[in-house]
Image (cartoon, rainbow, N blue to C red; front, side):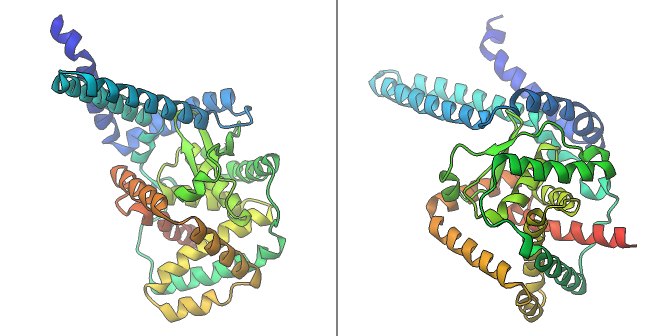
Length: 355
């Protein structure tokens, strides 16, 4: 009895981690039972409960936890310095900290993280995962630069209201959902981040909160980048955890949109990925295609460069390193480069639908 009382939480945590590892070892099991079974029901409830609230409950919870942890840490440090049994206190605190982080990881996995073990876009859309040739990249970059220029004149210049953002994204996903039932998006719940300008220094455009089911968007970004960022975060809400796959789903939603700003935002973003990939094979061709961008797109990219330089610093670098490690731990060995894999999915999808 004393043994269970002393080590019961640790044993339960180890069993939970073992069970999760066993479950996620079979991607087809994850897809059937979790990604298209339990998870959609879970997020439907969370978005219904929190979606109507005008501010981010998830961010508010984060802020409360951060403040509480700082208070508790200062209190524990003070007690530790005064104590005569520092080694015992250190062991006890380490054990509790290990348990807390362990259960947070388990909760993260159950609420969303299991989606990292899905079979992937290639299986879901029946796309072969073949390597793109230089000609493929060249043709895709040309197509995307034309689409970018096509929608550039109609892009929104001023800031979006929250209602406008929801309307644009909802229409795109409603249209996409008629073609792919598993991409229907109900009870929208994406909101501006409460962290405001702090997000600029941390270098993020948006993020999904698995504990509240909300998608947060950094509304301090240059306005031309917001629509695609919103579409990307909604894809995370729909259970597409990997960054390249969320980019692909967001791009598909844009293709089904009637909004020029979303179409411009998505095509410009994916063009930059495609042209960057082409540059590694043929820098001259990439430069010539880049020069075909309309003056509107060139202006927006210059403004974005100014924006990045203004907020770039040690906090941004630290955040990038942390998130890179996070991606490595969650089946994305390319790290931050995983975003760019959208190029392959977009090209394969276009070839399949064109044929």
